[in-house]
Image (spheres, rainbow, N blue to C red):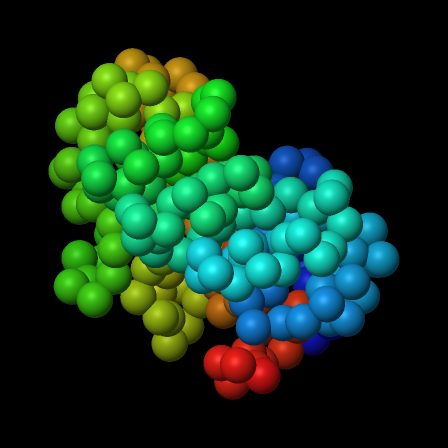
Length: 221
């Protein structure tokens, strides 16, 4: 698949669901990719890119165009928040108080965040449990965090349809939450293997790496 094929499929999935394709932001996840690969997608008109390692984002961002909107999509250690706070457009993985406190440190208001929910109850993954969403939004509000929505990384699907219940659960949590927290509107769901299902279920942002850039390079490449 190529970048343009991904964008065509995004548009087709949105139209099938009766949605405007412009309501879906494609985050091109560029982890392990170098300057040339990122610039090829940038020169095609793309501006939203994602990274999941603090040091990698901190090293890449100064060498690339300043109008890129960087999304931090991986688990972030609290002691590394300062490395990406000044660069990040949206943090997708807020999931604990220590990270929230670290994100608030520094000049001015920090970038907005999404709360990561572990919809599959997988021990190896970050994120809060679905029943912790109300309490989490209470402490994020007390800290002063600007929470814009929810994010989930479901179990790797054998079939894209396997992800649908997880996407529906997150959408339901968002809808219930938005009554008390009207700024919580975004859904960051869907990756290379299931982004079309995610769009059908209301994704605001999809995080696509392999379908755009090809296989991830070995670390250090």
